[in-house]
Structure formats: structure tokens, C-alpha cells
Amino acid sequence: MLVTANHKVDELVAHLERYIITEDVELSLVNAATLTLVTGESIESWLETAQPHGPIIPNHWFTQASYWLLNSVSDEHSQVLHALSDDEVQAARIAAGTPLYGTDISDEQFAQEVNRDALAISFTKGCYLGQEPIARIDALGNVHWYLTR
Image (cartoon, rainbow, N blue to C red; front, side, top):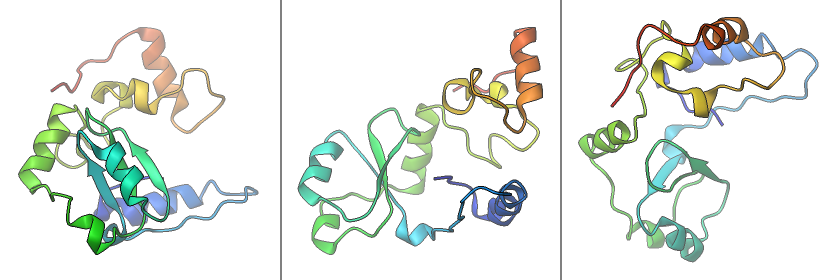
């Protein structure tokens, strides 16, 4: 699953479609209204109790356990969830060191510059798009700047 800014969806889909040649791949767009991010100290026990239908996908944006739910949460179970304000989401995102496209980063940065090595880069996988500049930075040992919290 890829999560991206709304204004980047068409560009990302067009980019990915260029590289689907013989693979059995289908791209599907999921409306944000059907995607819920749940997090909190007791989220795992809540998931066991609520047993939401559909995929439960681990999320790595926050410092505590969090998951994407791909279907809506029932009214009964959503009553115990506390919706975060935009400011609370931003504070959690910043505390976890997760950059926001368009605010903190753009297409101009390499993954190493925004400290995405552990989450977004494989130095052992075979060929992939963008591998050459990533490998060059790895071989040289550093970048000019790092985004930090």
C-alpha cells in the first residue's frame, strides 16, 4: 500500500503504470474516507476486541503502534476512538520524525537526506528505480544535509 498526498495521486499512478509491462499487477485507488489510521497505547487490544473487517496494515509513521484500517469502523467500535485534531496529528508525525511531502520535503530530496534509509532503501535488493544515485550516496558516505526532528 502506498499512501500519498492527494495532489500527487495522478502523477504517482502514471509513473507506476509506465513500469507495469508483463507483471500481473492492478493499481487501485482507495479513497481516504475508507482509510482510517488508528494508534494509541492500547490499540492492539482494541483491534482484538473490535475485529474490524478488511485488511489491517501496520503503519510506521508514529513512535507507538499504529495501523491502517482499509474499511470503515463500525459505529459501535468507533465510539471508543478519539479523533485527533490536525495539530495533534502533526505533533505525533513530527515526534516520530516522519516528513510530510510538500511541507518538509519535495521531489528534490534523496531518501538519505530525509533519514528514510531504514524504511525506504534496500542496499541488498536487485535493481530498482533510482538505485544509481542512492548507491552513489552510499558509496560516498554522506549527503550535504539531513532532515531531523
